[in-house]
Image 1: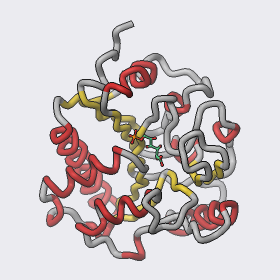
Image 2 (image 1 turned 90 degrees about the vertical axis):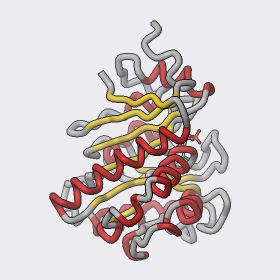
Image 3 (image 1 turned 135 degrees about the horizontal axis):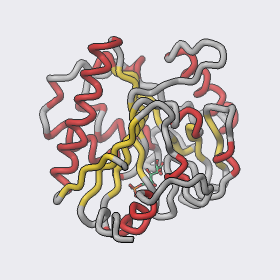
Image 4 (image 1 turned 120 degrees about the vertical axis):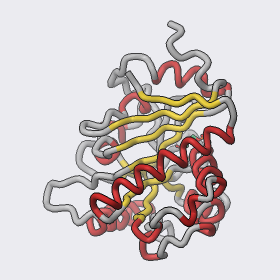
Length: 247
Ligand code: 6PG
């Protein structure tokens, strides 16, 4: 059984998503003084940003206790319109007072391999990981592509079998741009909470597949997201949720 919320409007979805994130943030900060989140690109970020700003939560959350990472990033300059960091900067961070030192973009000024290594090093440092310990995010916010990709983990990509590295490199993304850095499944599946956001009729097919009993098929990366000690929550609109449970 997957936990999910189906919204009749984009505005309501944004509000419910923001409320959910605010709740997780308050809980994590109360328990451990920090809230660690990894953002994705695409519509999930738009919904979160709209919800947080609209809910005027801005004054209610302790943003200084957030540690912000990305589930994936395109290997483009951080001020490029294609950059997930740039999208978050424009839509979210300019409204929030998250200290700059707590926002950890992938350093895309480095060559991709070096950027992946450096990003893994930042994860180890910020999460203060002991030998053999994986970073455990309080929340990883993910979108899902029509092909079942999530973050920058694409169908049948060898990276789906990665069991050691925390950060992987994609040089042949079917979704442009081709070069990307992504968290791998070991890190994603170590998260305490994972939320998927899927909206619009173009996602009806893939959400129906995602809600079928999970399999480890590498054709459906979204189904390989199965946090060992964590929860998944889906935020959908009625169009994307149309075919769930119909067969
Ligand atoms: C990226 C994203 C990617 C995105 C999905 C869904 O960098 O492209 O992280 O995984 O979340 O492609 O995007 P939409 O919700 O905008 O369709």
